[in-house]
Image 1 (cartoon, rainbow, N blue to C red):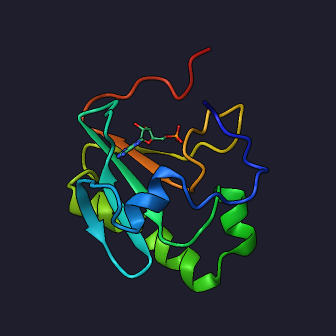
Image 2: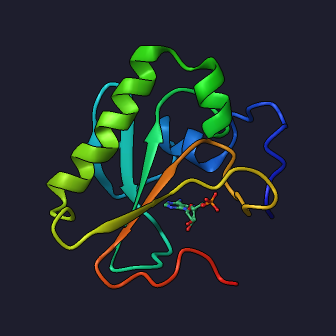
Image 3: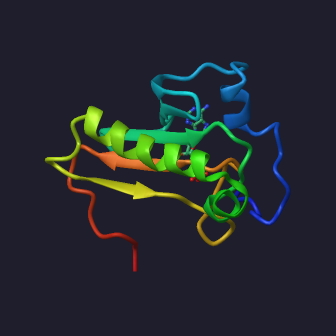
Length: 125
Ligand code: AMP
C-alpha cells in the first residue's frame, strides 16, 4: 500500500529493520551515514536502493530535518555508488518516491538507481 508521507516516521518499516540487521539484504555499499542494497524485486538489470541511515520518511523530510553533514554524505554516496557500479558511461536514472501520488511503499527515504538497459520515458502518459 502506498504510504501517506505526512505520517510520522515509523521505525518498524522494512528499511529500518534492514538497517538494524533484523532482516537480511544484499548490501552493495555502506558507510557511516548510508546503506545501499539491491532491490528485492528489480525493475532493471541494475536496481539499487540507496538509504540514509537516519530516520527520515522522504526527501522533503530529510531536507527539512537532516543535518548538512548527513545530506552531503548521502548525495556523495549516491554518486559514488553509481561510479563504482560502472554506470556513468552507459547512464542511469535516480528516482525517489514520496507520498501517495508517487506510490511510495516504504516510509523511509530511499533513492532508486536504475540502469543496465534503455529505461524508456520518464513517466507513463
Ligand atoms: P518505493 O515504492 O519507492 O517505496 O519502493 C520500495 C522498494 O523497496 C520496492 O522497489 C521494493 O521492491 C523494495 N523492497 C521492499 N522490501 C525490500 C527488501 N526486503 N529488500 C530489498 N528491497 C525491498
